[in-house]
Length: 396
Image (cartoon, rainbow, N blue to C red; front, side, top):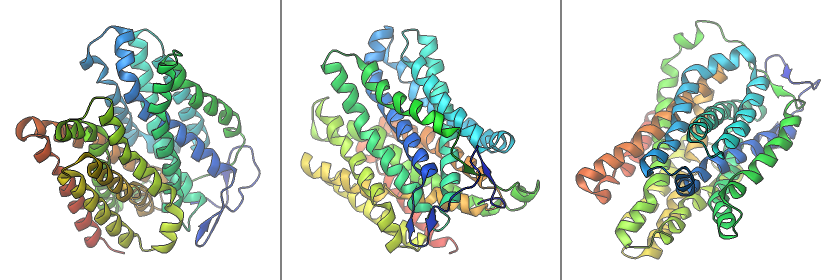
C-alpha cells in the first residue's frame, strides 16, 4: 500500500506500474527482480560449493552441512524482528542493507578461514531473509491489482537463476577456475551494478499502523501463515531430499541424481515464469491454489510410484510445476491479511518460511531413519492435503 502517495528514495514520484489484468514493470520492479535472482543464485549455489569448501577448509561433512541451516536461522530472526526494523529504518534503507549483506556475506564465504565462512553464511542468510521479507510487500504495493503475479514472476526469475548456480560452479571447477569464480562473479557483479540504482529509485512507503492494530487482528494472519508453512515445507522437502530419493530408489550415480532432481527446480522455474498469464486466467486465489495443489500431488504420485528413472524425472518436473505458484500466492495472501501493516505481515511470512525450511526437511530425514525414505516422503502429500483443506476452509 502507498501511504498518501509517499515514496522513499531520492525520486520525486512513484510511477503507476500496475493496471488491472497485467503488470507494467518499472525500474523499481526490475530492481527487485534482479536482486531476488542474485539471492536465488547464491543460496541455491550454496549446496554446490559445500564439497569443494569442505576440501578447502579440511573439515568433516557434518561441519559444512551446518551452512544451509544458517539461512533458516536468518529467516527466523528476521521473522521476529524484521517488521520492527523496517518500520524503524524504512524500506529503502532496509533494501540497501540487505543487498550489502549479500555482497559481504558472499565475499566472507569465499575466504579460506572457517570462522569467516560461517560468519559469511550467517550474514548472507540474514541479508537474504530481510530481502525475502521486503520483496513481497514492495511488489504488492507496486502491483496491487496482481500481487501474486508479480511475486510469482520475481520468484520465477530467481528459480531460473537457482538452476544456473550449480552449473556455473561445476563449469568453473571443470575449467580450473575454482568454485569461487563460478559462485561469486555473476551475482556479485549484478549486485554491485544494482546497488547504486537502489539509492535513487523511489520505493513505496508503507502506512504506519496503529500500535494495537496487529495484535487486535492477529487471528486474520493465522490461516495464511500456516498456508506459507505448508507450501514452503513441500518445496524444501523436494529441494533437499529429491536427489537422495533418486539415488536410493533408482540406484543412480552421485553425478546423475542431482541432475535428475534439478528437474523439480526446472518445473518451478517454468511455472513461475508463467505467473502472469496463469493468475490472469485464474483470478480466484483459492481456485488457483487448489489447482496448483492438485498438479503437485499428481506429479509427486508419478515420482513416488515411478518404476523407471525417466518417469521419476517427469514426475519431479510436474511436481515443481504445481508447487511453483504456491509460495507466491500464500505470501501475497499473508501480506494482504494485514493491509494496515504489510511489512510486519511479510516478516511473519518470513518467519513461516524459516519454520518450514528448518523443520519439515529435518522431520522427513528423521522419519527416513525410522521407516525408510520412501515411506517418510509421504509427508509431502500430507502437507499438500493440509494446504488444500486450509484453502477450502478459508474465506474468499
